[in-house]
Amino acid sequence: MRVGGGRALPRGAELRVPGGAKHGMCLLLGATGAGKTLLVKRLQEVSSRDGKGDLGEPPPTRPTVGTNLTDIVAQRKITIRELGGCMGPIWSSYYGNCRSLLFVMDASDPTQLSASCVQLLGLLSAEQLAEASVLILFNKIDLPCYMSTEEMKSLIRLPDIIACAKQNITTAEISAREGTGLAGVLAWLQATHRAND
Image (cartoon, rainbow, N blue to C red; front, top):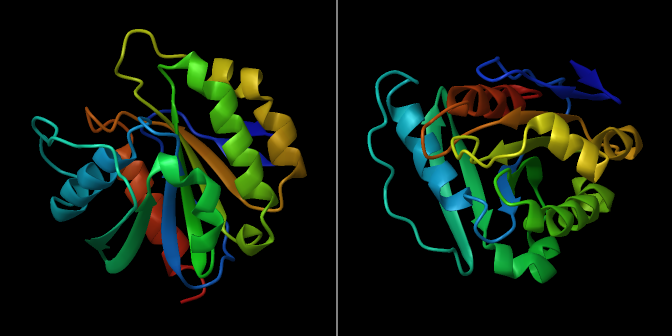
């Protein structure tokens, strides 16, 4: 389904990127508790297994205070810089050399939605991120209380946001805990970082 210039993909669909972002790293951003640390650990597992096999129990995580650099190796090395949600006021210090942006929203926590929307708007209006490809990830779809993608898009007026944004924006539902949708995230990263190489 196409939404106001952006794309929404059904669960398990392959994520494709229109070409065009500059060479650089991937930023992983989102509110505290959205699941960024588990996501990056699970992406490492998926990439090391070529997307095959059961991921097993999720590894233990703690909230990130500061920044973590993680290399994902699948066809090529992609460096992901995860920034703690508590670092939101200084995220802009890390925008330089950003080729892609993973923005994680907690689909199970409606109280966090408005703050996440404000963060997303700030990211999309940043001049340094104007050429970055953006993947908005609605995480925690494994929980019984999660909001559907359509509900979240409606609540934050995502079609309007996408229509005004300079970036190529894609959305996907994932479960970092269960591994749902992570092969698609990895494919999106590979395609984004392959463009213009």
